[in-house]
Amino acid sequence: MRNPNCFPVSLCRATLCALCFALLSAGPLTPQSVVPSPSRFLELEKRADALIEEKKTDEAIVLLQQGLQQNPGWEGGLWRLGSLSYESGRYLVARKALEKLVELVPGSGAPWALLGMCEFETRNYGRALQHLQRGLSLGIPPALDLVGPAYHNQAMALLATGNFDRAVTILKGLTRKQKIEAEEWPLTMGLAILRVPLLPDVAARLLPPERLGVYRRVGELQIALVRHEKRDARGEWQALVDSHPEFPGLHTAFGKLLLEMADSERAESEFRTALKSNPTDAIAQLGLAYTLMERDEHAEAEVLSKQVLQIDPQSANAHHLLGTLFFRQGRYDEARQELESSRDIDPFLSRVHYTLSQVYLKLQRPQDAAREEVIYRKLKDAEDLFRETGRLPAPAY
Image 1 (cartoon, rainbow, N blue to C red):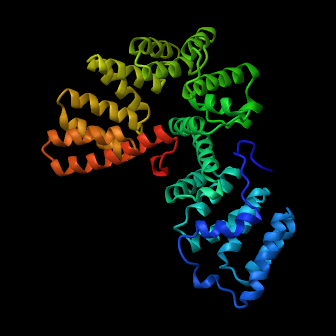
Image 2 (cartoon, helix red, strand yellow):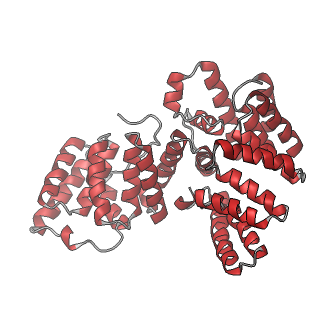
Image 3 (cartoon, rainbow, N blue to C red):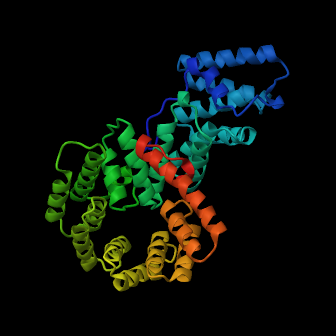
């Protein structure tokens, strides 16, 4: 049964079958792809494509499996079997075929992406993220119509594994550049923003209607902001917070939004309100620390950052904020240690590389500074691309 959280995708059509693998192939077919009886094998391909066109899925799969028994290295057959099995919900069959295919053509993005999508369907989110990232990084031919579904599956897997900020980044990109009318899209966005590690179908089963309504409302307002709809989304956010003052995560999320809108005074108020009900809310602590740092109130900002690190020593954002605080105070070696920790935990935060390059300059380490500057520019270019196109290179996830 198809995972209800997946993005609809249709991959197999006879008019594309011959084109698809030529597009996704990293180069010429390997010698292992040549069968002992070429004429018979070409006839088998034609028959399989005809069955696919006629939507005779079971017969097509049997025929493809017979062909692969004769020649396990038949790349086109593996792609057809993998994509057709995925489309028909036979995820284990698809995964087996695609695992073999990525061994044969490891430089092709589409098989890796589809393999990750199969793993998402079977809720193996860790491996799905690895393979989706690799596929997107290698590139996917537009004719296959896999890019949007791959990004969507990646966002959902990030949500399920608690990588909320990156899930929101991808969801915003999909919202900005694709017309998505899925009923549960607002719920998905709301769950990610309020940092709830549940996929929409699970949340719909487990959570009471009133809570689901708040998550959907948060998602609707975020979608409105992303799409620049002509409405007072900020005012509606405020009304939502006022009507649900005790709802977990709501003050923190609104504070983050206010920071994005450069209203640091109101953001500080929301963060302090959030911390009254949950003193260990790391996102609110870091948000408050940031507003204090911008006012040069370094002592309290330092305390808040260190409190987050006591609970979560692997918080790249906390290390970065603390390193930035030290840098601004001229404590360059302490800044270096914190920023290097942040970089090692999450190497894809462009701002970390920039600040670290400035620290290295202060420490008379020009080669290290130059290296970090190069990395910063590459990551920043990727972020700018995302803002313009809604697509971000997979390694940045």
